[in-house]
Length: 114
Image (cartoon, rainbow, N blue to C red; front, side):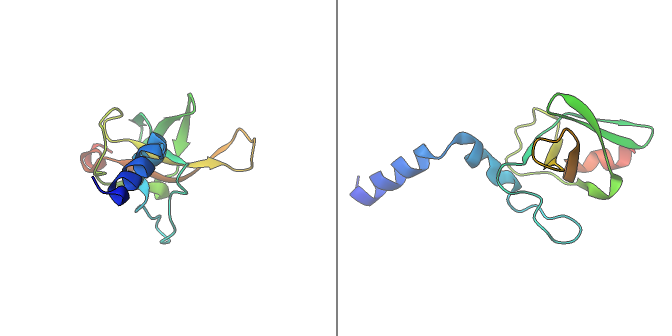
């Protein structure tokens, strides 16, 4: 193994798994063309559809997601633990309890369930 290959292997191994796993979100854009993700704010999220509303489980609580933030698509690299549900967003203000959804990803087939 060459020295360069060894150095690259060490660098890749030292990147936290959460950052490596976050790569499935790096290409996501909202309706305005802005990135949904800043490398820390997207995650798999269980979801449920009730009476035409989307609810996602984020940080241990169910939040309602605005319909204009929903994208129906498959994410390459999705492990399936949330049946294709993913949430990107954060607090309106640091330390605030209210969460702002930037993008919500649902599997394509769930669009017909609404």
